[in-house]
Image (cartoon, rainbow, N blue to C red; front, top):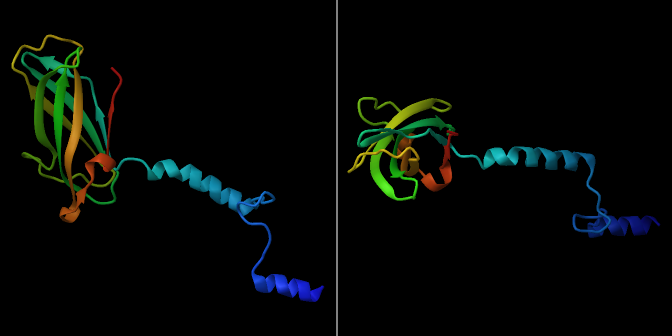
Length: 163
């Protein structure tokens, strides 16, 4: 009997493994799994969260309010975004591209955890009388501290606020 136990320990067999039909995870493994599943959505969240408020049309211009929150661990030095103004049929009636962080008179970076408001002014060739205007926002450049570039497709999440 002792030779059999010794032979089993030498071969490396230590009981059922993951994938065996008799495998039952232990309590500590279950807790690790639950903790991993709990924090997984946090790992997939965006580092720059942008909320787009409803469009306000004034004559031949529209104002699109943005609220941005920095979820990075470092400063966001600058960010450039494009705004497309769409009417109720989905036709583009105006477009603009601007630096929304680190631009103009306020060249200060966005600190980690901080929020910033920006008002996108979008000109149009014609008078904007439609009330069902929507704004499409895309970020094409995000520069972090030290000149490191972030991936705008992965690191920026744009959501629209309810009207």
